[in-house]
Length: 230
Image (cartoon, rainbow, N blue to C red; front, side, top):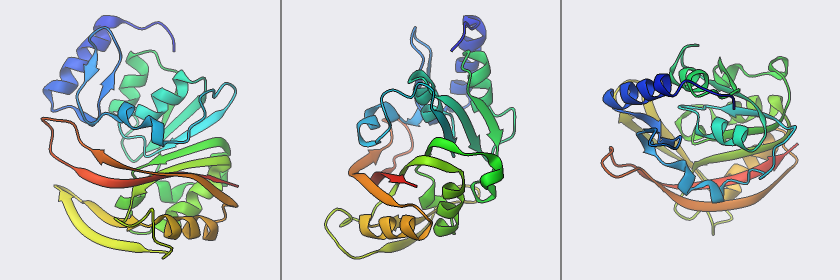
């Protein structure tokens, strides 16, 4: 992270909040807080992300407003963030105006391939449940994972206890535009899918309730987070 113009950053915060905030609540300190649906700092304990990422290349897939990209840079990682938004979207402006060094690249998850590069750590949080072809997405993630994938998604209610490889179809149109919640997975089902996608081992499986922030549109979703290795 480099020095940044506080007034430009403050202006971006004010403008973003006036427009309704964004996906992640982002607290930059000194009263600079972007309102968001989810404060992921409350849930970091469930994500098996190494504490020290010095010298590690990181790809944050489906970065949204950039929480995990920012967190991984703070831990020393060399971070690239991707999503379907335009090149000068909010996450790119946040990186630029707050002096972060991570790069943002518009990229559909299904278009990821080995040509995009190999990353020591790939993070994909709360994206898989919104995708019509989750196995195809996992194969795309495998193509860019050089070491570890940290994955989180919606879980079935009995995910932690069942040995059934369940992929439960919700098919819920959750908000305006073409935004759906399609899937919940049991731990067994997601593990088998990761194996089918080419990952060698899966561990650090954790479950938690992901709940949106007060005074935002209410969402509550039982989640699974895990690590997969090539």
